[in-house]
Image (tube, rainbow, N blue to C red; front, side):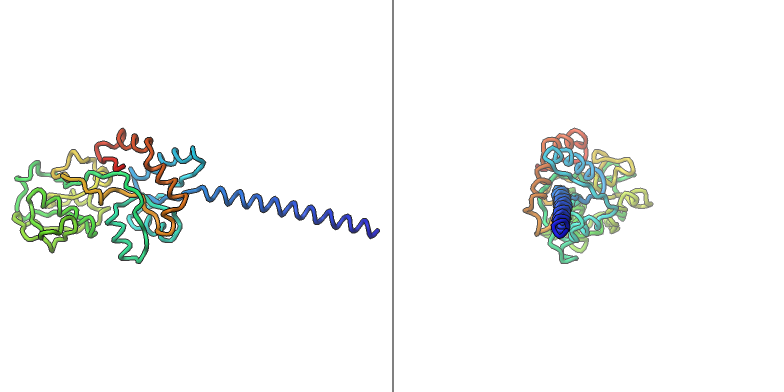
Amino acid sequence: MKKIFLGLGMLGLAISLVACGSKSDATSKGSNKEDKVIKVASQTTPMTDVVKVAAEVAKKDGWEIKLIQVNDNVAYNDMVASKEADASFAEHKPFMEKYNSEKGTDLVAIQPIYDAKVGFYSKEYKSVDAIPEGTKVAIPNDASNEGRALAILADYGLITLKDGVGVNGTVKDITDNPKKFEFLAVDLLNLAEAYSEPNVSLVYNYPTYIAKIGLKPSDALLLEKTIDQRFSIQVVARADNENSAKIKELKKAMTSEKVKKFLEDKHSDTLIPAF
């Protein structure tokens, strides 16, 4: 009888070990699968479309790029900073640096992907000379994009900025305003709506946002003359994961020939590949 109980005990132990082993294996497999998932936060097209194309490339290497789409220009950085996402694809480096300085975070620009064609649009005027004195000009209310917008106006001789400020200027840095422009600071997401406002003659915008009202860069009255790659739309990660296998795979997929061809074939009128 003692031998029978001993035998049953050993059998139970064996079953327990097998069960634990199976559970451990399952957990391990699940963990490995999770390690191959790269979470990328993005806001709108064409950024979200680029992430989807990159996902097709990464899939061939056994990786899953999972798009997390957000609704504003803060959430994607918040998600990366809080480790809810591995990376984002939605912004240029100066905008990211502004977020870091305000939030005390350590986001890093990893890889430029494309340069958006930006400029000023006018619903009334077809030439710079026709723009009247005292008109309202809508520009972004965040420092990084404000400076870029003012630099365009300076390049066209419509305003003069302090020497050396370049794309870092603010309205306070305007030294000469011959047309007596009145500047309206507007959130980037609302600039398209400012286009239809009365007495607003010029509106700065990105192709992504101005497309909402049926316009494209070829419709711009003032288009940025020189591409400054500080404003390239970038893949952004954190300092603690920028050299990880996930980010290396993401960079590889985002700079693939398939992504480049997509940008050139589908969006050549609004952007230029930056890799």
